[in-house]
Image (cartoon, rainbow, N blue to C red):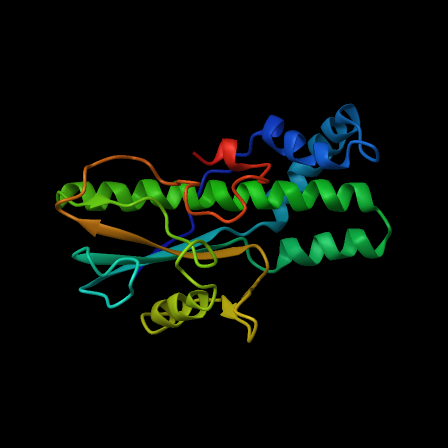
Length: 210
């Protein structure tokens, strides 16, 4: 299993503020900007990014069984950031809690993108192309596969992510997903496609993920 903790701290302010426009009657853009700036050190302190992946040949999962390899992946920001956000909600500092939550979501996707770069480098050296990211809960891939992915990865080594009975992940700011890998696939860097996402028409953050 490949384990990484050396992720760059990168987050795009304009994308976070754009997502928060949903709350524009309660949270104005200028206010978002000030809160974002004040919370950057908080996100840096409390988010502990961690990413893992492993490849498996001839997987029986229906969404990747036509490819030679399935790459199982998980990323998380750890528990500390979710506890900090809960603390802000408990203190009734709702605006800061909402902004920090959005910052954490975007940083989680940034960590997943950086993990993809590491996977891409390894796969390209083997002349293996990759599918876009395949996430449980999207079209033809039930949410229950989050637990399956986590179990596969835990069999290979320590992983501080748990799938609950509801198949949701704990810590909250975590993701489990797959890529198909095959020599017949083109060598491209398309990490994410919105085509099969059930939320693609209402998503506020897809622009920053493609």
